[in-house]
Amino acid sequence: QHRVTTATLMKMKQDGQKITALTAYDYPFAGMLAQAGIEIILVGDSLGMVVQGKENTLPVTMDEMIYHTAMVSRACAFSMVVGDMPFMSYQGSLDTAIENGGRFLKEAGASAVKLEGGTAVCSVITAMAKAGIPVQAHIGLTPQSVHQMGGFKVQRDEERLLKDARDVQAAGAFSVVLEGIPSPISAKITKELQIPTIGIGAGAECDGQLLVLHDMLGINDRFLPKFVKKYADLAGIAKQGLEKYIKEVKDGEFPSKEYEYK
Ligand code: KIV
Ligand code: NA
Image (cartoon, rainbow, N blue to C red; front, side, top):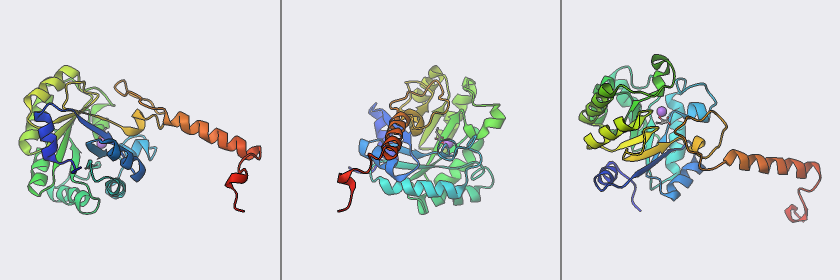
């Protein structure tokens, strides 16, 4: 099985084959995703919230992103690994953006990066693409702009979203994530663009679907937005195991003879 590339994704769109994407932040989960056949593994800066327990994604650093992306890359020869550019790693100068984007490929084994924004970040997308760094754009609800948006809100400005989508494609993005967008608008964007759209809270018409792993597997019990379907209850399974362990140790049942060295 060859690794998924930007060309694979483009062909999947042309053939009408849905693209599957999930986030992962470490080696064991990335291994499970790759073995299951997930095409895109996004090492999202959502790790600030789901792994580090922070309020939002703003505090996540480049070094933290590199650390997690390297763990994920080690686990998978199949999936495309996309590193998420953290807040303030690409909003300054183009040189800094290229340098930071390059680190995901040079140091962390990623084959692409993602960054938030539409028309406003097109010069960054073009500069990075010219430097040989494949860029996935991300429009709609962009969590790094939480303060500017006034909270995590569904984005409904159709004209602006269509322009953002067209502009990031023209700037050289190989794909675009559509987050928190009403389905009819995502459908329009998906139909119009040549590059694949990956939706999260953006309806069924996107070329692919993305969810935050820890949300869809029920790993932590944080508030889940309407668009998240919970495919497993790993927190529940873990709780059962932990309670059983505690009980058996307290009762002197564990370790029984079979777990002892003679
Ligand atoms: O950080 C992340 O996981 C993301 C997706 C939710 C789009 O950016
Ligand atoms: Na992100």
